Amino acid sequence: MAGRSGPMVVGVAAAVLAVIGVSVAMSSGDGTRPSGASGPAGPSSAGSDSDAHVVAPRSQQQRVDVPLTLPIQSYVLLAPDRLQVHYTTGVPECYGRLDRAVVTESPGQVVVTLRLRRAPAPADRPCPDIALVEDTEVHLDSPLGDRRVLDGSGLRPVPRGHDTG
Image (cartoon, rainbow, N blue to C red; front, top):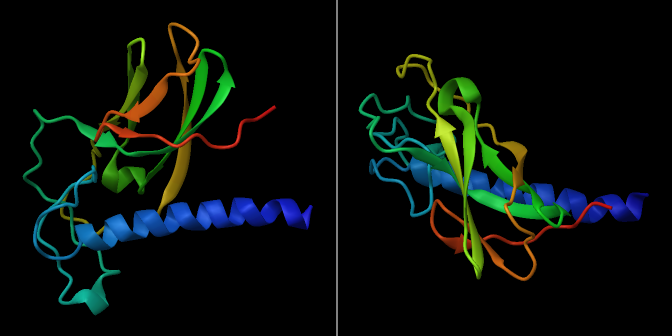
């Protein structure tokens, strides 16, 4: 059993490090977010790179006309027409929660976009820098077959994880 848990620990550690990298970039103080990042961006209270673990209050100038998305980490094929999509997010009270998955299918690809429901909490509260690994099930109109799965937040290919069963 110990031999099988090693790859899982490495996978979870890699996902957490990826989110920490996005969080550090988001709190870098320049008010921008890295390409592919979907969290709110705003001025940072971090004074230097050594203070990168400090997360600033969310920007109060979020545009409600621009839908927020969550980047997809990987997917697992549960059935020919069902995917389990893995994504990383933050504390729902600060960063919002998954609203819905939007699926667009074509003969060569499946584009999955995870839409984020905005957080209802006041924007002036500091938010903990915690990564939460979540998943959701996505139903397809036709079997996936050899079609590529793309992340709708940046139209990048989504890696296939280990299938269950």
